[in-house]
Image 1 (cartoon, rainbow, N blue to C red):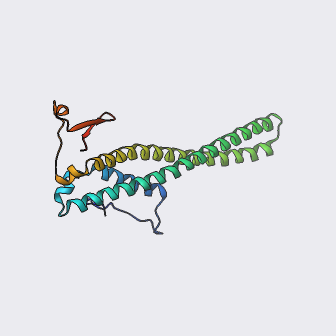
Image 2 (cartoon, rainbow, N blue to C red):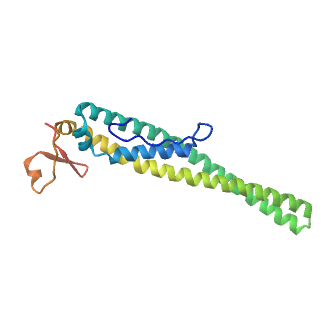
Length: 193
C-alpha cells in the first residue's frame, strides 16, 4: 500500500482477469493519487517521517517505471493499430471499387458477395478505429500524468531534508534576496548548501 494512501478498489471480472484498459485506468488512478497526496500531511501523520517519505518516494518511482513501460507498450500498440486502420481502409476502398465495377457490369451475384465483404471489413475497421481511439487517449493520459509525477519526484528529492525537518518554504516577495531559493527551469527551489 502507498504511504498513507487509501487502497484503490480493484473489481474483478468473472474469470479473475481485468481488461487491459481497466488496468491502465487503475494505474492512472494510482498516479493521480500519488500526485494528489499532501506530502506534508502524509509525513505529519506518520510515526517515522523518514520511512514514510522513503515509502512515498518508492511508490512514485515504481509508478513512474510502470507508467513508462505501459506508455511504451501503448505507443507500439497505437502504431500497429494505425497500420491496421490504413490497411483495412484501403481494403474497404478496393472492395467498394470492385462493387461499382460489378454493379456497372451487371453481376448481381458478385455484387452481393462484395457487399457482404464490405460490411465485414467495415465492422473490422470500426473495431480497430475504436481501439485506436482508446489507445490514443490512454497514451495522452499517461503522458499528461507522468510528467508532473516525475517533476514531483525531482522536487521531493531536491528538498528531502526540508521535508523531513517539516520545513515549509513560502515564496514571498524578497525571499530571493535571502539566498535560500534558487530558480531552476522557472521554478523556485531551496538552495542546496
